[in-house]
Image (cartoon, rainbow, N blue to C red; front, top):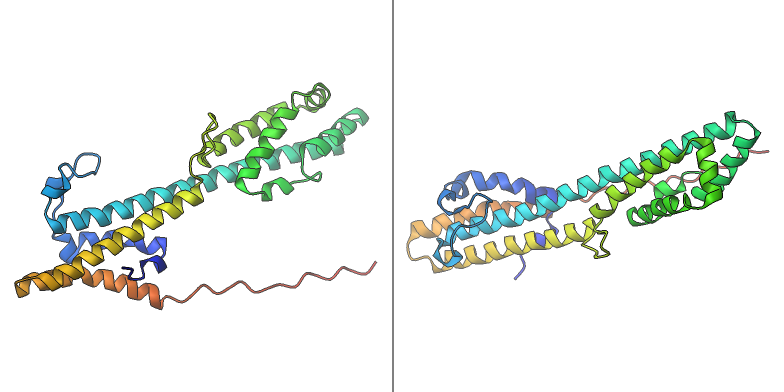
Length: 257
């Protein structure tokens, strides 16, 4: 059974962690049931039902939070890779402008071999393609003539910086050196979001059934109180306005020659 949690955004799920610390959810004390690493310290069949539900929600939110943090880390590593490419291109351009005749020839050969189109098109590649391009640049330094050009221009340290940035980015994308590929961040986030949605759906199903099966009125009211923030989360996701698409800007006209 689905309640619509697939329409809830990552940020809303993460913010729901605050709901677990207040109201009826906040009155469910997990202290006796948590190990040091945050996992349940006993068989789940020995844990009270409402504690299990709170643990389930916390687990789903935690998995999603970890995946989001990984995505943010990748963005930072990719920006570092872009910056190393910009620095390399700036030094190469300076050599082409200010160097002597031999340096200009070296710069032209390096620019043709180690950039995309003679510029920085590579920083607009997909993250995976950036890793491939960076590794290609490093391999090219093994060609004697090109290595001699890089040495003349003093650019071997720049290529080493690119190598380090590339090999920092690669494992964050799931590209292990052994050849075994882990999930890419986007896939990891999608899987985590799916797990979080499943947790919220599962808890909602259980609470609906608890309300129906409750013998005492105060018991039923307690389960209804636990459902209230879940229902509010769904309502917010339904009424939240969709993102306004960016306006289409027509291309500028070519100036007359």
